[in-house]
Length: 305
Image (cartoon, rainbow, N blue to C red; front, side):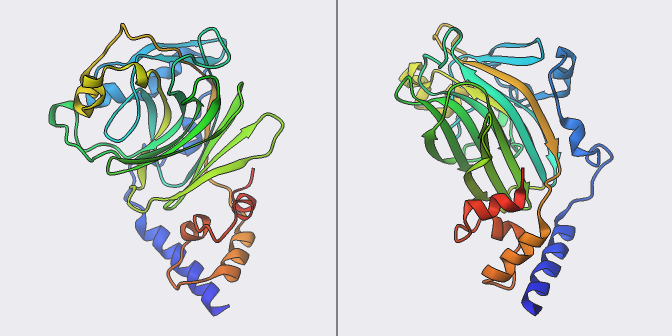
């Protein structure tokens, strides 16, 4: 029990000392960032990546109709130093963000363009804009749904990018509406999905201790990577500053809602898990939640529904 007390006392102390001095805007309850898209007036509350960092606007269409946000993009991709459309809000501290989305073609159940996906993205704010861009400064992770390769096969894409080095995994998905979710607890990021009538499933768990307390959280989309000419694809700076409107893409990203809350953890189960698996005197909750010696089922019991 002495080890367990040390673990959670130290975890609490680290969490307290790691938090920056917050401004009034940062202390606003995280729930106020939620959006049900009942009006296009709320779009002004979202920041757009291309505006913040001064890049061409690769959003082909952005509308709100009947309580649904609709996004279509020009040809682009999120990978390494390559950038694409992204709507976000700056969130400080731990969060549990959920969104209900549907990715389809404009006239079909699935996009017709390869690598057409969209979903939830967590990103560190860049230290540069288009004017002073430098490589190897992209730090983010996301969970998206749509199609990759081959066409006609719905997929989830989970991608983790550290200093512009990206690692991706593809897993089978279904067509239609799906809920996507990311839970941040300290340095841990837990990525989940839920089809209608089904329980939450964890797709991936990432330990990202260098991501700052404040990150961008929002909706990303990309389509038509394979249609881009090689001279654009071979250089990220060229890709990021090129807007090729004549290249056909087929992605309709629909968002019913995005909702934020603080994580609600089962502290008793977390303590029991720590007692069961304790390995080091400086283990934190984030270490436990991203330790793959601990099953997804055990983690899901802690982060809850």
